[in-house]
Each structure stands twice: as C-alpha cells, then as structure tokens.
Image (cartoon, rainbow, N blue to C red):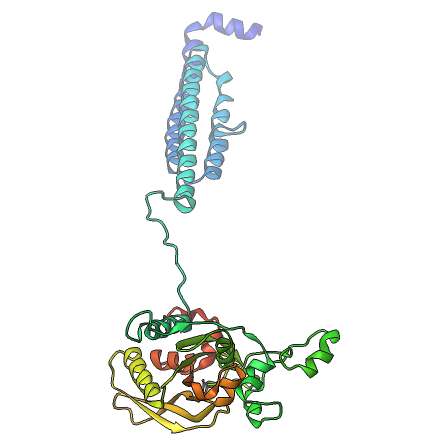
Length: 379
Ligand code: DAH
C-alpha cells in the first residue's frame, strides 16, 4: 500500500493514464459484446417458431447463468463511470429483450390458438349439412303403385277396387279349409308354413277346431272368405300383404314375400272380365310398353277353372308367370255363407316381389330383405 501510494505520489502522471487504458479496452470489449449479443438475441427471438424454443433462448441470454449475466460479472473491473454506463446499457438491453420475448410469446400463443380454431373450430358461415331423409322401400313403392292402378280402375273412383288388409297370423281354417284345402289335401304340401305354438290348455280345442290352430298365412287368399263373410256382393277388392312359406331360400325364393290378392264378385263375372282387368293393369303398370297376357290352365283348389297368368313384355320372346287366378269355387262361396248358384266371381294372387324385380331389373329376391344400403339407396 505504502509502495503504491509512493509510486502514485512520485509518478502521478504515469500511473493514471495506465489505469484508464485498461478500463477503456474492457469497456469497449464489453460494449461490443453487448451489441453483438443484443443483435444475436433479437434475431433468435424473432425466428422462434414455438414456445419451448423461445424459453431456451430466454435462458441462454437472460437466465441466471446466461450471456448477459456473464457480462455483468465484468462490471466490478471497470471504473465507476464505465460501470454506470455499461450497467445502464445492459439494463436497457435486458429490458428490450424481455419485452421482445414477451411480444413473441404472445404472438406464438395467438398463432397456436388460431391454428387450433382453424383445425377444430366451427365455421359458422358454412352451409349446413343436409339431413338425409329416408325413402320408401322399393316393395312399398311398387305396392302403392299397384294399389293406385287398381283403385283407379272402373267407371269411377268409387267403382275402383277397394284395398283391404288381413291378419298375417291366420287360422288354419281360413288359410286352408275354407279355401277347399282340407286337412290331408296334397296342395298343403306346397304351402308348408310356420305353425304357432299355443298354450297347452288350448290344445284340445285346437285339434278339434281348426279355426283356432294358428299359422303364419301362406298366401293372401284367406281374406277371400273373411271378406265375403262380412260383405255382400257386388264388390271388387285387392288385398296386399306379407305371406310366409317354410322353404329353402335362393335367388327366387324367400321365407317371407308379398302378394296382391284380388276378388271380384257379382252376378255375371267371367274370365273375360279377369282378362280385361289384367290387360288394363299391366298396360298401366308397365307404362304402355307392349304387354301380352296369356292364360294357361292351372290347379288351385279354391278356383274352378284355375289358371296361371303369364305376361310377355315388348319384343322379349319369354313368357313370365306372374299370377295364379280363376273363377271362385262354389265351395268357397259356400264357406263364406253365399248361395253358390247366385254368384260368380274371379280371384287372383300376384307376387309383389316378382313384379318389383321386373320393374327395376333386380335379379335376387333376397336383396329386398338384406337391409343393404348399397341396394336400398338405388330406389
Ligand atoms: N294363393 C295362391 C298361391 O299363393 C295364388 C292364387 C291362385 C290366388 C289362384 C288366387 C287364385 O286368388 O285364384 O299360390
């Protein structure tokens, strides 16, 4: 100390400039360092793309062991004047950088929110999604068309065919016996069906009374007697409905299908009336495409004579069987409580699936019941 003082005293001029020179170069170095770091940090901040990168930059420059704190460590080596100057500069750069980081942080957060809104948000200006309404099944559509045609047939709407419906769970009596198909008649074999199990306590009376044995109807013909029991001629009706058969399924057979039954009773009905009705119906159904109708003899216990009805479309050489028909059998009139000699009538039964398949060119009956949208959406 004494030596230093002495040195200072004897050579004040030499000592002073020396000390200042050291200080100045450090100050300059630090000052440049600050400028470089400031520039570097600002660039880095402006280029950050996500929050974690920004945080890494903050730690690198402004953290406790960061670049600027390293510079602060140099301060004590400087003159009071430089210390104050560099100190202020450091503070102001720190503040600038903190503000910049803050701004960048908000910007990045906004961008994240915007991106989220863009990807997950609801654009209220977009047109609404249309509700897809279902539509009628092709069988229902064709059934309704057929009903319309028959209803419109006649001299006036009132004279058109009435539409009536019957039960799908039917008694053995109406399904068979009343239609002249007694217990052991071979015609029953062709219409094997699903019998319903009934309570044991009812069994005795069921065996003795076939009106009570229940089954899923095999055809719509049971409605003939049911209707005649309650109505007096003249009348003309059609009976659309679902029927059941116990059989193996394939492209043209199903265990459930639909028929359109018809019955027309009056004093003077003949096969000529039946033929006229068929010709008129098919002309309307196939919309004036050329249709020929052919009758062939056929056997059904509830009609006499019985016929099979074929049609031929356009220039197609093939006849297609579309219905069974005939003149109502006296025994059926009798079962209904009519005096057979008083009345004449025709009856027929058509397959709805057959006509629908012809109408739309469908080649497999099983498609109707598959509930396959690829099929159903086409109608
Ligand atoms: N019910 C018959 C069947 O399912 C079809 C039929 C034939 C109905 C002749 C009739 C008819 O009304 O007269 O095979």
